[in-house]
Image (cartoon, rainbow, N blue to C red; front, side, top):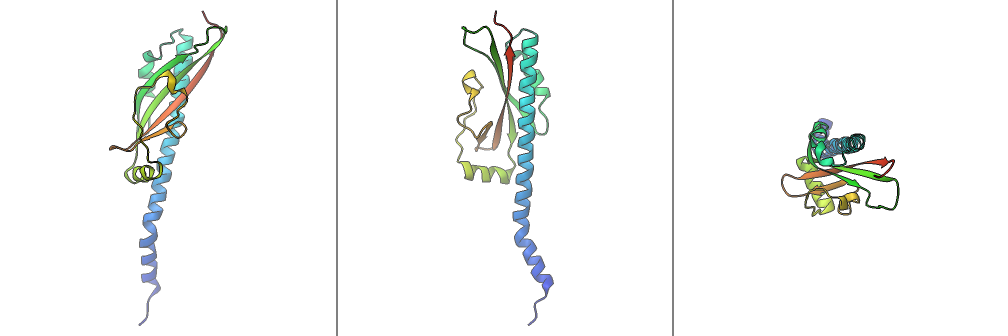
Length: 163
């Protein structure tokens, strides 16, 4: 009985193809998350600069600006502006946080759920969220359907004086 190399090649391809496709889709999802982080940071810094220039430190007025900057499958989630609480200094900072949602692709979502065992509960952003203690850097993951990544961008502007 003689085996041909053609049958061996097809068998190897069938075995390796799912792993190859999983790696490709994982890399595409990571690229999408990287783009989401860049755009969320850009939205936050743009809104912070605009709010300080207009002397309107209520970041809630700039939700439409943040929504317009969401691209590549991103959805606007929430926005908050946080002026410094230290009244003893003449200068301070104004920090804006913008959070976007990115739906996880099915296979990537299952892998992330198995890897991180995340128990994230999305809530509106607040000034206490300046350090994201529940996520992985600026990323949080919600494992319930639809599996979703939450990406938080930060923009910081130095105020020249306080009134």
